[in-house]
Image 1 (cartoon, rainbow, N blue to C red):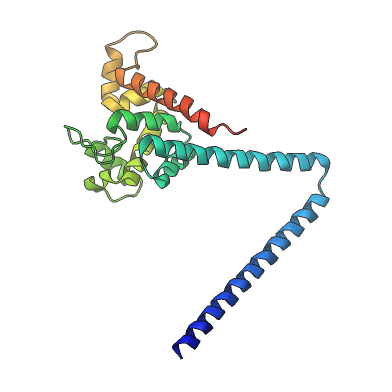
Image 2: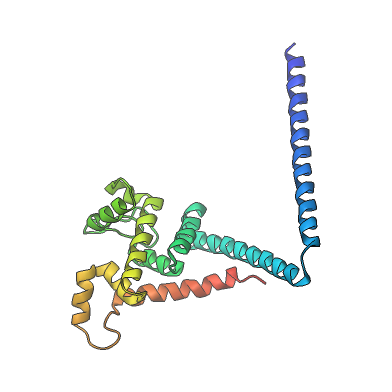
Length: 224
């Protein structure tokens, strides 16, 4: 009897798979027919624009996929974290390579890094800063969670985006403030003269890393 039951279960499994395949084939045929029907009513110019949009979306998808793979190799973070960086930077309209530069400078991409003054995680966030950002995001603040990659990345990217917006996208002001605090930026600028008063060793190094990563990534993300 047990053998008959197993045969029956196997038969039913095969039947279920065949039914699902048939269903998806019908859906695919319906979508193809609908697309052909729509195409029949498009002008030549509209067809060209439609096809151009399709290729643009394809290229964007491939570039982002390649960029995530590049980040994964560079940082040793998992693929989900790398895609999270890309998506968060898109939402907040900031350069992902600047974020990579900050993380490289702060922790060398080590999620478990801990600084002498208590800085934690990828972005080496101080507790007082991280707590404010986390609460503004509606998160429950937990200092130990700063060692969690996703939690730390969310707060780090949010803080960088906030500073970029605060200083009118002046990357050196934003980065120097990230490193020294807003008061530290003012003191730094007061001690220097000229148009590059906001430039610090920290901001210059982050920008250098960002440029290097941008050039390297272009080689693998450029779609032919």
